[in-house]
Length: 262
Length: 200
Image 1 (cartoon, rainbow over the protein chains, first blue to last red):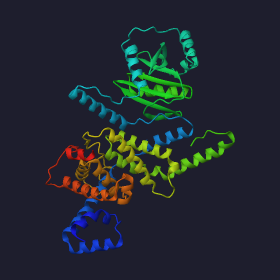
Image 2 (cartoon, one colour):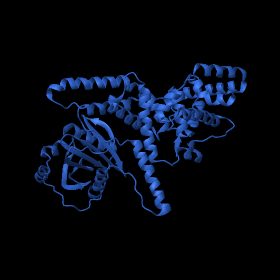
Image 3 (tube, chains in turn orange, blue):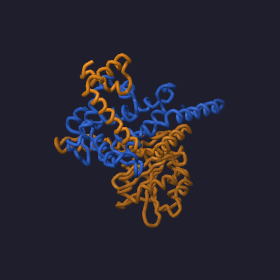
Image 4 (spheres, each protein chain N blue to C red):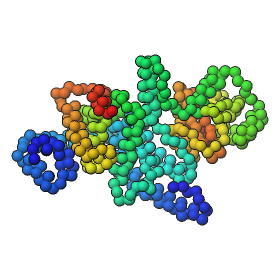
């Protein structure tokens, strides 16, 4: 066995995968070649350093384990989970968007990039135009008319009151279209800030979004879009999407409450 | 497996599902620290690493029926994770991979980590982050997680000869980056053009 064979077979020697006869030849060469034995020892020392450093790093899996167990439990109970759309895919989306932008700049030519689920971006745009910018729209303000409109859409009027967490009241409502589907757009207020809640009956198709937690046995998804925070929750009967510019926590808290009461 | 079915079958099916959950807990979940440890060295940031592990474990759960009891569960899980990682990377192929020291997970367990100076940890973490994902992967799996070359070949779906040469090159690259004469002090590690080409 010569030095180049030693270099080639060193990975198998280190992991103990070299067959007995070859290992013996390897050992024999090391006994007679100081540069090869030095090289193998250097590799072993480097391996040990690398192992020590990586294994010394803190690896807290509690949060991941909890999410996985919750999602498995929800699936076992028969909940349809939204398609996974995790952060690394959002990263890929950003990278693709950046690449597409480069193509646009350099070649002046259009391209496509992956975006968040359209129902979220539609809800964020709708909230921005109709609630933040207050563009004129034909709203219903009378609670009875709103309840009647909800019933026409297949939404139990009781749900309208149930989703109002303490301190919130229903301000106005109208129908709107998000991702080519009709939603009942409710504007609720805590006295200082208005929040949108979009409701529609569930059609059996799960929304596509990043599942962040299982709230009361229901998958809760969140997304942050251009300073507007979106959280959605799906029950067997309803899809509810909360949109607020307040904070991601505020959107999630309202979605959690909806998960608990709907 | 669904729990829906004729009423007389429900108790048995529920038991089966519960047994499957218990088996998954016993066989797969103990490997989540290893998965996360490696994912943190490969993904953009900590949340992305957690999502990669979450995705891996949920996919493993969905295909748990295909797992053969008694075979290497850790290798099976890593194969799933690397398939996902590769699928994502294919979509963003060609971009330089930038990894900051913070992202590379250089957080030690606590003060006074025996035998490991902080600058030693930082140097190795930085040098590892500067390697191409291929080199980082074989070092993490082969050296840190203790997979054999044959297992690595199976996990990464590459010939064993490629594993061996990649391991040798990865060790050499890491050593060069750690060599005091190399003068490669970098706060952020960016794959060289050659390494990016190597990815493609």
